[in-house]
Image 1 (cartoon, rainbow, N blue to C red):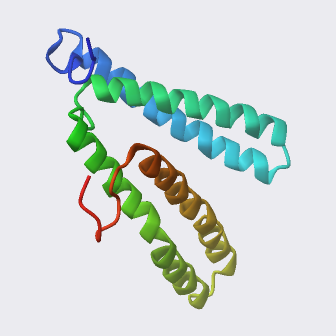
Image 2 (cartoon, rainbow, N blue to C red; image 1 turned 120 degrees about the vertical axis):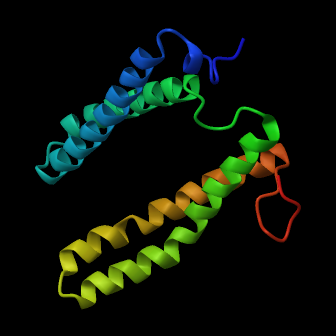
Length: 146
């Protein structure tokens, strides 16, 4: 039995919502602290915080699925992932434009931070492309929709 949408009608729905929020917020805080740890040269701590953040993010995803977030039906599931891919694949131009706007506004350090995420966003799209190809999923607008 799949758990998608299960907890939404459960007598424990409010507890699951609380757990979802705690895990999502905890994950974000772990990532914030990992970023700060890296800035302080504490790479060992940053690695641990990132691992904890990823696990808590997955826990949040599990609780979110139990509450009906995301799509469970195969077609809708893949369509949602394709939409996510398109956001990742188009992030390069918008992030570059934002970085230039920030740089022109006199904040080069902030612009550098934004620009530094572009390569990772591109890699997110490349990873998804590999999975789409492996599963025969159409993911570009010129191909049949998934």
